[in-house]
Length: 239
Image (cartoon, rainbow, N blue to C red; front, side):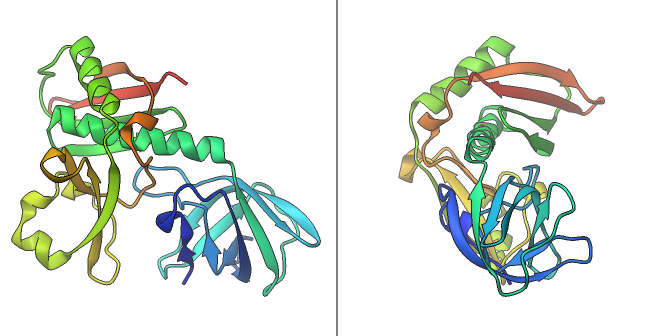
């Protein structure tokens, strides 16, 4: 099982690790990883893997059913052997844009307050699909509301709740349809704001900025009809 360092500290940009093995497709399994694996609408991280005999460009990371995290080289190359000490180095600029956009999309789900039925995060762009027949707020008003929340510089934090707690209190989560897998009966929850000032509390396995002020200016790129019961709202960041 790979230790998920990105979950402990999403701002960690480099780490030492040891190769546990390889996949038949040419992926690398390490004992620890700062690379976020593709999932929950968020792309896998990219970056570099360095060891004594060479370096490899990592295109993405994937999670195997057994829990191992696989680093996928951008091109077929000679791999560091099992047991080798390696250094992982993130493409931090790309990861940070994913973090900012992911948190911005959480704010969007607060402002719209309708069930989410799909979404995708990119480096500076992203979208959510909402189950609704029409937009209740004009685009300009929506953008203003998003930036007002971001400008409050609210703390973004994580906690863990049990499946039993969620069953007893389904109102704890606002996006159960997109909930990530549990870890030994627990579910990771992301909060935006604290105490009576908390505005969002939902299950999420992705990486986020520490405070909403770090997001920057949020722009509403477009609003699209994706069927009679769905509307897609696309966001982008100004930098």
